[in-house]
Image 1 (tube, rainbow over the protein chains, first blue to last red):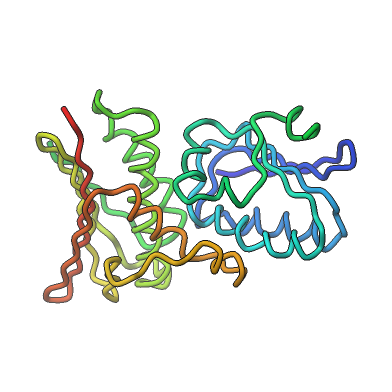
Image 2 (image 1 turned 30 degrees about the vertical axis):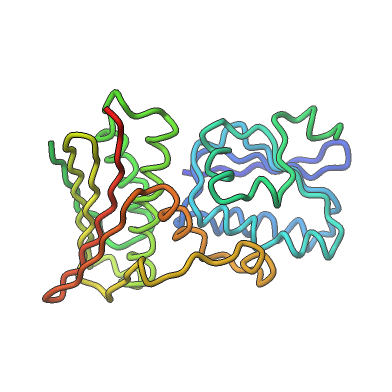
Length: 110
Length: 137
């Protein structure tokens, strides 16, 4: 079960992920990011505080947009991942390709 | 100790698979990180089978058996779809995946990095993928 809520704050488009991302629902995450890019967002923040699980289907969605973020100069940041979810990003080395912060305050002020 | 589950080949069965594994992986020597990573690796293999070997055909099924023996956990996944031998797939370069804007390919990296041994065999139309994790007890 995955819920995605979008809001705007301090010039950032924030996507709050709640639940589990897997191959059955990663399309929702894909569509949410795609829409923000299409709408011309310049800064996207992923709130992962309530993200309990993410499989390669979800991680692949982030990966597939990293080039677009660079090309379009979109500031993309993730924050609030639990230790065990962050560990999955680290197994793949994604923490070296994405800007990941412990909390919202650090994400916004860095 | 042995526990088994049969799931049907649709991606919505993955949540059911995780529930089963959460209920099975209760051994005291497993940390929360271990549990999540084992669940993830097993799910990645099953998701690949569901999507690529069975084309999400809900009439097909996959069997999973979890076996605990001293010092190791074995996850045996059997199916009758198109053989998908993980061992034949090389780990893709992450920068290449990024450059090609690909969404796939990461699951295999996770399975290979999380598990200690992977075995695959195919005989008489049945494919068996064995994922093995060793633990110090």
